Image (cartoon, rainbow, N blue to C red; front, side, top):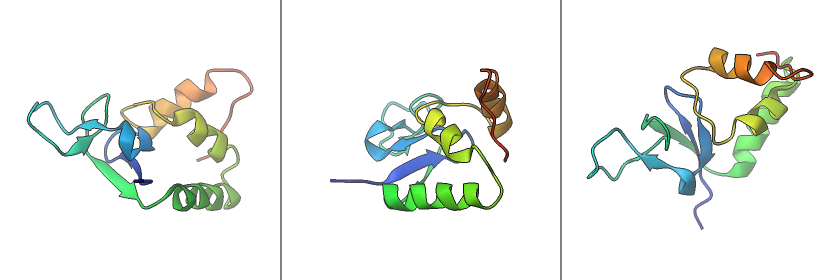
Length: 97
């Protein structure tokens, strides 16, 4: 089973490798891309690596980061600032990046 986590190079989408779309708009392309915008992706080897890095970032002065990342899964925004604005629009949700 392929457990890689992939995340946007330009957008802030993230998910499992099985959740990807295709890069760009060429229907013949077989390179994985964001399923929403078709943007390029980077990868990390396992969910453990992913969540360890999230926990480390939160522990280094970024409260609310894990909850933000959990909420962000599967959502595509063009940048982090836009994602944070949407996330924090609901009362009680904050994240320090």
